[in-house]
Image 1 (spheres, rainbow, N blue to C red):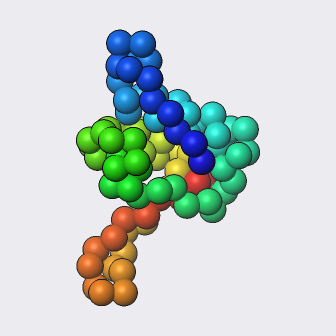
Image 2: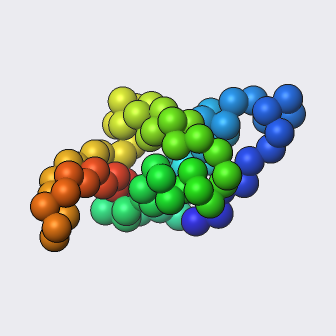
Length: 86
């Protein structure tokens, strides 16, 4: 999965660019049902942006019914949230 961001002046808010690109990948079946999405932290680090931008994009995709969120515990007992394509 390759997400590329443009400057805000050219491409708009980062969360919107992320949401639009992920939505296109889902609709084009490049991301299939059950495919995991990167964690907001890892995607934010990769794109060198604030994690909140990724979280907002995922939130909007979730409310559009395109991804689902699952919260559970990892093997160390820490709370972990994962996102997958619906």
